[in-house]
Length: 533
Ligand SMILES: Cc1cc2nc3c(=O)[nH]c(=O)nc-3n(C[C@H](O)[C@H](O)[C@H](O)COP(=O)(O)OP(=O)(O)OC[C@H]3O[C@@H](n4cnc5c(N)ncnc54)[C@H](O)[C@@H]3O)c2cc1C
Image (cartoon, rainbow, N blue to C red):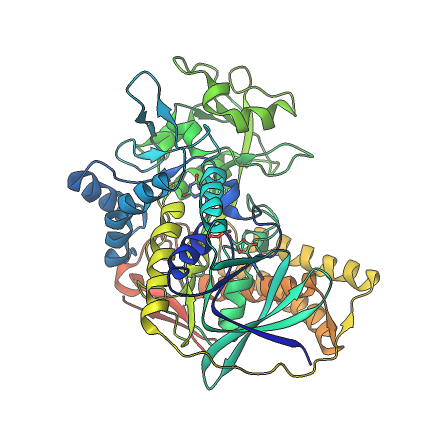
């Protein structure tokens, strides 16, 4: 029988949302934070550009709200956005108190520096170490959490299942790096396991972003919402042999132009805000400019060669150092770019306090969907989302005050995957990810989505084949999650026969408010319905 232990609160994920929640929970009980790899490996760690926050009082907050609502293309849940922008300043001030060091102007009495990004009406993005904001937020939160005697961490440990008793989540099954399974029962479980960029072959997300939390919640019967809305970042590095490294929006905030292979500054043809138009507009413009008439891909570039008045290497040290590995220099070279999957606006449906539709199960951060981003996230709103909704979810977990329940784990006989099994599994995963990019990426239509479904069904058959033979491994659990998330994206994208925000249908290019100013929800029965909230 697998080992069973107990804790007051179980948190899945050590990104900004999980850590912020853990700090609040620890004031009232013992917390176990579980993370699939090292504590630093999360989307949070890779966030570059900054954190959007209105620190200048009520007018600033009102403008941040309007920008968030405008970016979300008619679908932002106003109450969620209000909570985000109104509580954001307090959460960020608290973070600074706990040791986060944002960049300050040495000449101006140490004032916090602010930059501007796409679709923000004014500069309100705080940043740290130039372009390493997420790493600094993660570092400071982790240092604060580590110093708390009631927070424990389990690194290199994967949550592989949620334990359900009488319709309530009472714990989770964990798999450690030595292949040992154990069950942890808790009064409440928080999913803060981040996004699912790995469902696409082209992504800025690290390998841990396989949508595990979303898949596990769905398996436990929780509603998913807005899964068709995946944000594709317009400018990931497009260099043969290099990873799809993110070239932050802050580059455009500091004046970078986009040029096609004829040297034209093409954004003039697409949006009055030019390079600072909403991300979906810029990403589709780059995709179109990058398609030659003959079907052959054409390069598109970021151009900062003419930018004066800032030292680009000092302002963007991380990006500059990465580009230098490929003999590229922001001040000297045109930088080739292409969109890549970046941020999931949808996820596990929650109320404004992180409650899912399943008792005992809570969600926050990128894994969750409060509707705060609507159909398209405003740049740099997600680190703030993690802080605000991580804290709110923790408050709800404390208020709900559910009693601890214990359920022993059944004896599960599993067989290890052989290296041949793992190789075959990797082929299924690769096919699924490529199909998602080709058929459910930036430009969608019914016929391509149906091709996506065919590829997803084929991958599912391959993956289930291992499961039916009693096999288990971390990668197999990830493959299941990717497959489940892929299915949800395809279903929702097929059902939304309009174009809105990050979801663009070639066959339905217009927004249809009458039918679709609603959120898509996939409930327990696996069907997509549209609801107003
Ligand atoms: C390259 C890049 C740049 C970005 N830049 C910005 C930016 O400038 N500003 C901004 O606001 N946002 C930015 N974002 C988005 C932002 O970083 C994320 O949306 C946010 O950090 C998500 O935080 P989170 O806490 O929800 O999840 P994450 O930070 O992704 O953390 C997820 C955690 O869950 C764990 N986990 C996952 N599955 C399991 C499992 N099965 N078992 C146990 N643990 C698990 C992971 O190990 C990890 O610890 C960027 C994202 C990327 C990828």
